[in-house]
Image (cartoon, rainbow, N blue to C red; front, side, top):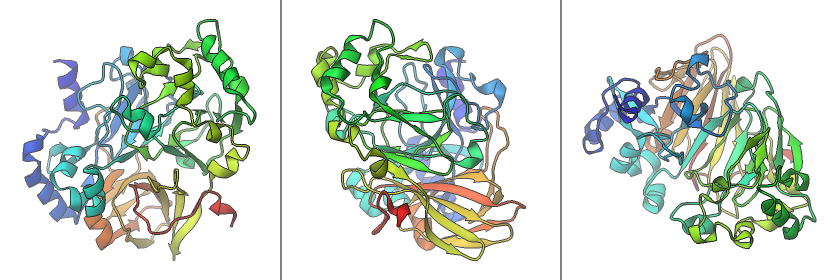
Length: 424
């Protein structure tokens, strides 16, 4: 059996996979049966240059289930129609599967087939896809100081830019691991000449870029909004990351915890003729945002109550805009034991259960304690635009709080808090 065949079988949880040209029939049945909810299967992603943090509920025997040469699994992607950009990637790596009546089909195919009902007519009309995704990122230690390209810079290589956000769910952070701090941006007053020296010293040992930056201690239950072009070296808390549907990046740090980062990972999403052009490489950074003296005030997030009722509370955890655009947002819903509420959102969302058990519409919810690679779960659901507009009842039928995170696509909300709104 080839790796591709093995991956297709495992990604779809050993279920028959319905091909794209036959998705409509099973999609219609699933939508009718659940009122517009789609059960998703776990989507695991390895990174060859990272070290798994081992908190995303994957069985310890399975962190290298995709092959030791591929690296350990330290990410789980949610509601993804975006392929990951790993070298030697397998056939459906990064893509979410839906399951219904013993069959599986790609969420991407479902959106292609019935876009307006799934993600809303406005989003479908503008993007012709679900343009965002989220993940759990779970590393044992820090990763290299890096940036994600802007939309204009990514377009030079036929890609899309990647703004992103962070939230540190307490339920997935029972321990800090090796370095619960994240370097972000550059110290005010840093010059481009100083950064250029770091790139010039790439092959001479640790290039010293962190000497030009500032680390912030990560706090459970808080988050950050990171625009494209801003340097950041995520620390070792498990992170929920709503972001744009792209996997572009450029690594600006050459050695992390003694591990060498090749130059190719700095320039992989830059035009080939610019791979040695240091001025061009530095020019892909948003310099003003990197040296912002009020960096924390302009990027740090704390939860804000959005709505609440007897026994439940819905909080904003990702909010604000990127360069004036509402690209993605996220909320955290908590329902106490024996209580219920109705979610009625203006747009589609992707839901992941992080604590407790209960019910989302017609679908059971159960937070996993531990999962084998390829195992089915009952913690992840795509709430289509159709279901969100009609309203979905959420009930906690367990003995502890039921907590779910859900993220939304661009321009979903008419109003949302600004960064810094938690101080109001």
